[in-house]
Length: 233
Image 1 (cartoon, rainbow, N blue to C red):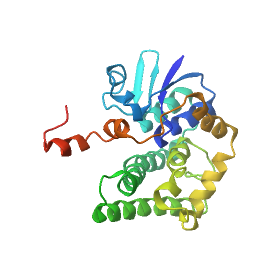
Image 2 (image 1 turned 60 degrees about the vertical axis):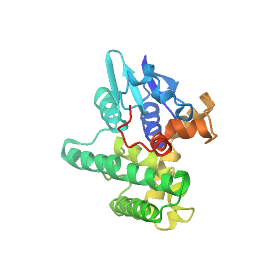
Image 3 (image 1 turned 120 degrees about the horizontal axis):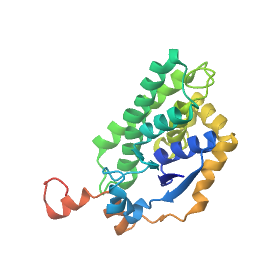
Image 4 (image 1 turned 135 degrees about the vertical axis):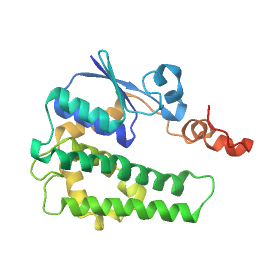
């Protein structure tokens, strides 16, 4: 059975949604990132980058959420684009992976978790997060899904990050992103999305952002304590 290494962060949740939508049997294996389990040798043997999600499907190991989505889509033959729209799907999937996710994540980081407030960083990442989300909103204007009338793994990728928009951009963000909100609501209403969201009840992840969690999730801060700028080992 396929093994799914996950946490409740946006990227693993995309994969959880696909697995539920496609009806693929899987074993969920929690990786508690606030306890540092992503850095354990047993997990870095699966993903050297020490991040979730990752899957092990027989003799095949895949990490990075976009790679996992594409692998599962091609393996199952489900939730793919048409041949004619494959270029659009790949373009917007990589846009989400390289722009929406990183800028939204860094926006949250510098607003909530940085050890000091850095106005330049807060402004840069808030601006770029908004810019990317507004481009997605424009894309969805007049379309039910990112590729029109066809629900695909691309929509699942957007859903993963859309769930955290209020946390990143504020409670009023949906007023400026009505089309993204519509997509989020449409997916949330799907039984598969409800099953995916319920994965949170399978394991009690650590919620405290204490010193242990800070070391596990933000190891770069250790360099500040030692005054070293040497590469992490």
